[in-house]
Amino acid sequence: MAGQVVWTDPREEIEVCVLLADGRLAPRSFASRAEAEAWARPQDGEEVVEINQVCSCDR
Picture 1 (cartoon, rainbow, N blue to C red):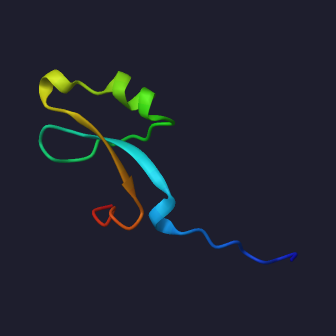
Picture 2 (picture 1 turned 120 degrees about the vertical axis):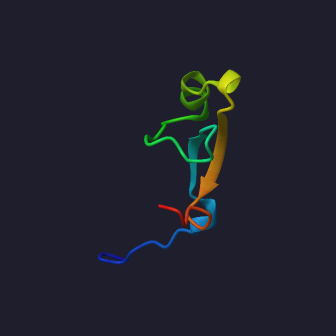
């Protein structure tokens, strides 16, 4: 098994992001949903979202 790469399904690789009020993703990453929720400002229209590599084609 040495030297073999273990395949992971990109649909299962979830990243937590903050969707800003202007429709763009915040230019930072978050270690957890709780961290993103603490950073986001829902009163300003921001929303915590979870995306996977399949959906992140705007990067």
